[in-house]
Image (cartoon, rainbow, N blue to C red; front, side, top):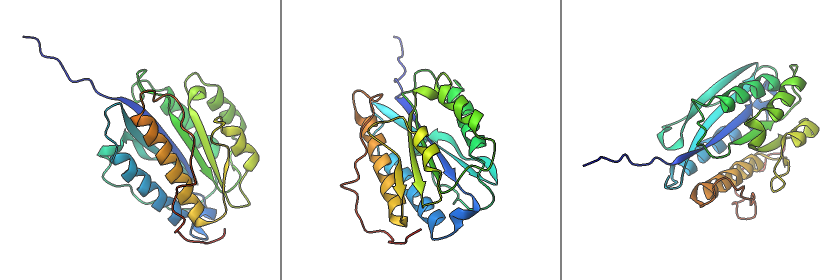
Length: 221
């Protein structure tokens, strides 16, 4: 009798590009980001994985670019080393690393659902980012990803972040308080989780901020 292997769920890759430059160390921004990412991981862990399996990667850019959390199934992530803020804002390098990851068919196979890429920053890039930005947005697989962005505080490069987004249901989100970081990540988590449970996981799900509890820090940036 033939033995049939159980069919594994197709992955939904989620890639977070997180600004960890020195300016993120003030006003509780890096602490709020760490807390929000931890909550995201716990949300993703709780999903059933029947239709789709959420995979998560965190790429940080602060002084240098690091794949802080290598792409892995969310339910296998035990914990994440907290982010620390220092240095400049090499956003171009982060976009280049994200493009390499998305285009790597060994890490993200062709059977994967449309990736979600989330860019978070509180400042302007300090490296030569323009060509890398264009290369990311025009690359074969990265251009098909769902892209979202959050501008933290009044010093963020809102024009560039708005150009990064490509989802009409998720325009640039502006965070003015620590609680806004939580609200954004919870909305993204709910959207991705809804996709993973859907019969059409490639279809984007609108971000919903209305049902997010408003009980975090009221700290202005």
